Image (cartoon, rainbow, N blue to C red):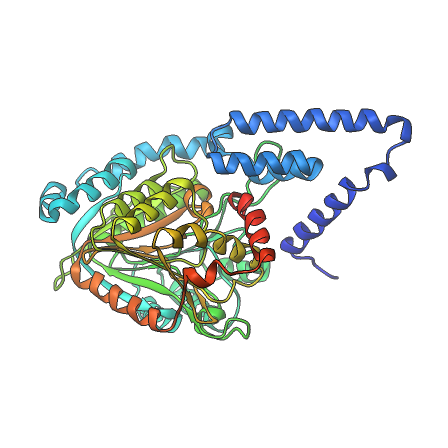
Length: 506
């Protein structure tokens, strides 16, 4: 029996809908053609009006309006699946209301908050804003280790998993079967048999290729498994668009991992298409581990309805030998405030010397684009590293990234392509003393649609380490020169213009 993957089903559905749309005449008696097309046009106008009067950003309104007007039937269906906002249909009503109560339970003692703010001096304004809009805790007794690439990340992860005594909280956007997953699975199962509580939270869309056999194996071996925001197509309850993009592992509240690296063999350079895969991750020890675990606890509650409020999940372990200041920031489409976007804009606006960015996808809204351009025009060293090789199956997203080059280059932003290789790191470095490392891409999905998390560090030593890694990445990159870029072909300019219109939908 052949079992078709959901991703293939969606592609076939899209092709079928497009075919039906442009061949309606073959299915409708001629005498009814004008009536059917009149009805379709009326529905198109209603949808367009709904979008225009909605609370989407201007760029998204324009893209969706054009889509539903020019490709009506397909546009209607895809808008219902991908375009409907949480703020309109309140998919997470129960969880949203409960988060206030969860915050009261978890965030009452605030980690010597005022003293840390004073210690940060002017940078305290950033921490204060992020805390105010995002309930983002900050602590100054942490050890932060930067892990470059999957081989280093998985070496430390496997070592720490072996040390687990009480619980392991495991949360990923993408988990792919293969060599590295088999190693992790073997440890998780062994730990579960030894009495360690193991919770495995995966995103339904990101793990579309994860077999039911594996899920069953994990459950049969005592691992608690939950699927975040399971895909369904119930009317007015679209679920495919809002994904959990976080990558979190918390072990006994003593150590945690977070960053850009999912679980799959491509992250250890074993995929023929990618070859070498460049990425970044963090290992954390200290109070920030508990803060990151609270992000997991909320996601687990949203998924299962079970609140993990036992003291063992909230216990803090201070780092004895380091005093790195870390602020854990999480965001998702259920929030009324654009926490991550506002945080990044604040960071960019506070820069005096440098704004160095690494992102695999660069699809900017007007506010972020203007913030970067004004910073560059005022003399701040603004640099952006993007991949030199497009992500598998995402060539159109790569073209969308290139569509922003011209306006950024005009203002003096320096853009680099990472050789002919893929770079997946999500890093923002501000001057010499602030940096963000996490799961957040510079695109609409990360800022508007995905559940994300990042760690802002205010420690000079960690930032200096990130700067040195960035410099090394620059030596492996080719700068996009404005003088050469403006000579690109008319065909490429046309493609960029078309793709840019629809970039908020990618």
